Image (tube, rainbow, N blue to C red; front, side, top):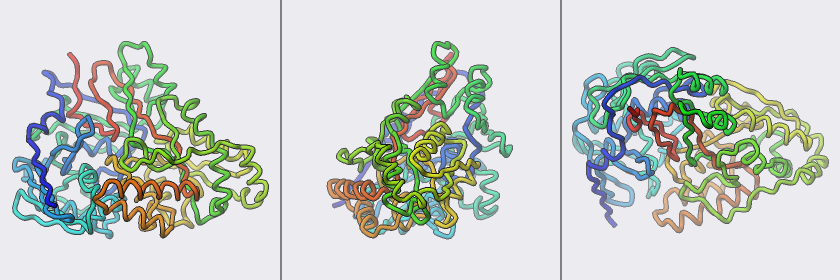
Amino acid sequence: MTMKFNVLLASVAAVALSAPVFAKDLTVDLSGEPSSLDPQLQWNPDSYYVYRNIFDNLLTRDNAGEIVPQIAVSWERISDTETVFSLRDDVVFHDGEKLTAEDVVFSVQRITNPEFGSPQLGQFNQISGAEALDDVTVKLTTDGPYPALMAQLVKLSIVPKHVVEAVGNEAFNAAPVGSGPYKFEAWDRGISVSLVQNDAYWGAAGPFDSATFRAVPDAATRLANLQAGTADLVVGLDSDGAAQLAGQGSVQVLSAPTERVAYLGLNLDKPPFNDVELRKAASMAIDNFGITEGLLGAGEIPMAQLASPAHFGYEEKIDPWIFDPEGAKEIVSAKADLAATPATFATAPVFDQRIVQALQQMLNDVGFNISISVTDMPTYLNIVRSAPEENAELSFGRWSCACQDADGITYPLLHSDSAWSRVSDEKLDVLLDTARVSLDPESRQAAYAEAHKIVRDNYYVLPMYQAAVLYGASSDLTFAPTANESMFLNRMAWSE
């Protein structure tokens, strides 16, 4: 059946706040340096916060979470596998060249090209074809029905074909050119990235003349910078930091539940976690409630599945993890030699190290031999995407697809075809493939429910909690956190 979506252009304006009558520079302290500014090369928070303001996407979500136009202004599903998008005709890249359908096609073909090696490939590889019908019309074809297409396209950044082909991927990453509300100005490696306002932007202008994103790995330093007024917005705030800001009139704490799920990744091909009983023992050793309520305390919700209530595909009937350290010790003692195999726990400064250390302690308390390895984010990402023999035995992750559909988290982390996955289970692959292509919501939900149960029963990965996000901000800054953790500068405002 043909489905047609005609979306009024006025909805674009509803996405952003009106620009204030004066402008000011903004300083944002991140927990780490962006690993990439090419939006198709990487997918992690510190990169995402920055490049989302340099590039426009084919579609976007408003602050209420609804899918709304951006480069595409309307779309029509002409068959189960074909969708036609009508594009804006007034968008120019930062170098003055007009954005056309060819740039959209190039962006799709680039991110879906396995040789390009995008970590986001698993979220877009259901797209099998992209065709420019004219300068402002694009047809996308999927490999079978793909109900999550629109949810994934909110992340498809449009890159300029003429620039990428002229300079190459490495140079484009070093000096990206987009069509978004802010233009790239400078990248002082290891220190900061600077953006300036795009005066020629087609949409709502940002309220800042410029924005500087600084890499500040130490959480206490980020907090001190906010209190001193040298930072206007800081990420990675924890409940202790939020408590320190309470009652200070010059600053505020902003929060929201997210679609991000924190999990303990296990290398299923190396001891000790190639043994299902020891994986079960690991799950029993971890006090999820103690971590979420005692350590975090910002509204996190314990999870035993790779989905959250913010996702389509979340299953309410999945049993929670059982915290039973004595039972875990019994299992470990029966396989003491295997359990004592030295295991490396990979992490990066972007993650809350209190959690990593608590997990290490809980596992070692029942007889495992876990040591923590902290690296910068690019190195960490390379480790967790490497072959099993090169991968760490354990890794801590907090996954968000910014799509609010279980396809965006289960497929990359669980399907055997994904570079992120350590799982190889044919039945699980079939379920994930079924959920990915079925246009019947009930069939999709049933497939995800069974998939979550398989993961739970085999302890393939240990989901821990639905994350909440906490930001510290100047009291003069208006910023509405969202479940997909987008930081759109042109949706912010300064108060008088």
